[in-house]
Image (cartoon, rainbow, N blue to C red; front, side, top):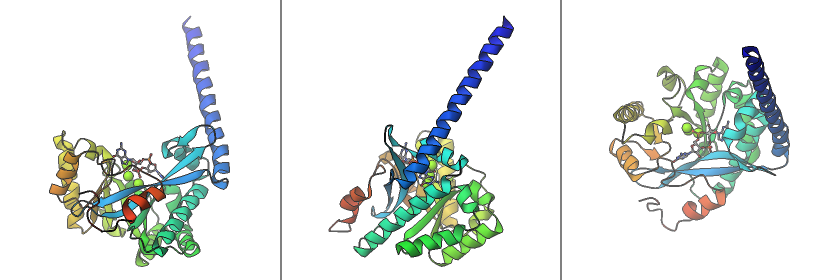
Amino acid sequence: KAKEAGRGTHAFFEDSMTLQLKQEMDIARELSQAIKQDELLIHYQPQFDLQEGRLVGMEALVRWRHPSRGLLYPGDFIAVAEKRGLIRGLSDWVLTDACRQSRAWAEQGLDFGRIAVNLCAHQVGDLAFGDRILEILRDTGALPGHLELEFTETVLIEATAQTQSDIVRLSELGVHFAIDDFGTGFSSLQYLRKFRTDKIKIDREFVKDVILDAGDAEIVKATIALGTALGLITVAEGVETEEQADFLRRHGCRQAQGYLYARPIPASDVEQRWLRLTSPAAAIA
Ligand code: C2E
Ligand code: MG
Ligand code: MG
Ligand code: MG
């Protein structure tokens, strides 16, 4: 009897594995089409200066308008894209589209600050990483100073000497670098100096309970202090309440991004709501 049950369990796992693999292959096949057929789009999430309230930039977050499944979020397809060799095509598309938007806004004289784009380990580890970024900037006519590249601590720890020199080269041209999800990876303070980071993004995990959890509050305060001491801009992610914003402001955090201010939205909405203000005065105050 035990043997039968065992077999049953085994068969069950086999089935669910096959199903998972099949779904993954479906996503991969559809995604490679999606990149060519313009099914991808970017939503931009504005970032604000916590003292002055003005918009300082925005993060580009990819979405996929799937023909039958509706709007899909990165959690549904980025991991598959990385695993199945599609991340390069996807990221090229995102970078190019974000840089086109940057150029278009710059041409209209709109002050959008920077557009931040997320990069994964595969892209940064690519030997042609620096060249590809430069090529996209050239092709789109976007200014390096309007581009910010975000990656996680883990990416930096695995970075080769080549990656490091690419980062230095790009930063000398004005491209900005931000460490995403700071504090969740293997935090090594060495890379903050080694790489020319100019921003650290405090992860939503710590911001979420900053009012309720004394431990999280200490981590956030220490991170802000560290960033400030090193001359870096600190940005808090996932700010959802006024209490959180007050806490962050009081402790010297420079910028914030989160549902309290804006969800990720299409570029045209950002433009209407924040870039076409008649007065530059506080958008969030
Ligand atoms: P991330 O870079 O940490 O991006 C922030 C995520 O937090 C976004 O989710 C955003 O919608 C969400 N968020 C922002 N404010 C709030 C808030 O106040 N409350 C809550 N609950 N959530 C908030 P999203 O868009 O689903 O992106 C998830 C992750 O996918 C990103 O995390 C990023 O690592 C990755 N990703 C997004 N776009 C790209 C891309 O173009 N390329 C690559 N390689 N990764 C991407
Ligand atoms: Mg990010
Ligand atoms: Mg983040
Ligand atoms: Mg995060």
